[in-house]
Image (tube, rainbow, N blue to C red):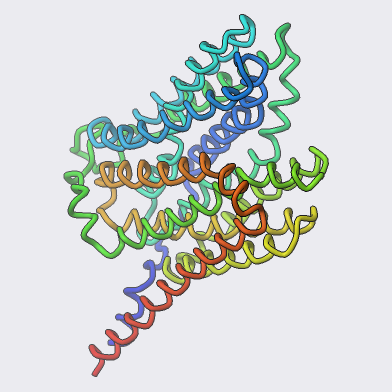
Length: 414
């Protein structure tokens, strides 16, 4: 009885390999997605500063992209219920092809409004990026959903190195500065369209209509009443708020501390390595230990990263802190995503996924928009203390949950 009860707290062991051709296709798509997104994150604020009628409006294009992505992420989940993930991902990538070309035209004509329109269209693509991992989980064999989730995220590791480099290397390819960079966004998205076409239209069993889930989509209210949904919201929300706030604040704090621009770029690069590097093994850890213990580990690493950041404003403190924040984010993200896919049978989670993506995206957007105000109030070190405190609170909640689960197991065994 004890063995069965404890096994119920973790993912079931894998029965067949998760390393399928479709998984590699989806991982490559995730790399191309983050590669294109890296171009926007690296250059759009700079281009906005050049084209905006006033300095205060320079970040409007990025803000527009974030807002559109947050709203559209819920719609993407809803559409996936009717059309399937494959169709949603195809449409998302196609919009990025168009959005990249509009941004390219904006740099050529020096139109700030066109830049805002282009980034808004790219925001539709950004809204679909999280669904690559959900599709991989739906196609994974029994017991392999957590590992499939983390393997897809490995695509972000390569993008962390190649994305920013591609953005700057392609900036002078056309007559107008940065036009080549936005052309690269379109080309990378076009490659995603071609690759997704190779994915099976539906993961449903034979006899099920193409593009339709094998079972009815689970209503949001049903999933929201479960412990798995609450745990997913806790882990993904914490990861999004802490990581987004400190990542957005990092370059500001670095510049305020008098560090060179190259030092700030190095910090963000190691932060992204921390975000995606652990994907090589975080899925296997989640499969072996369970999502709960993986989430506890991630929250603990976030807390340590916050403590390191609070110790000083040197390059070393910035770099180590942001790298640890990235690692903690990865473990929380994989664990939280694992809890999400537990809320529904495979292929029936479109509505639940949309609700989670929109909610977590909204929290991340608010954290990003408030980063400058938080920095002005408490500074880099103070913000890290806040992040550490929030992470410790999550550790406490997860620890209490473990203790209660053990008490329940003891009562059953008695």
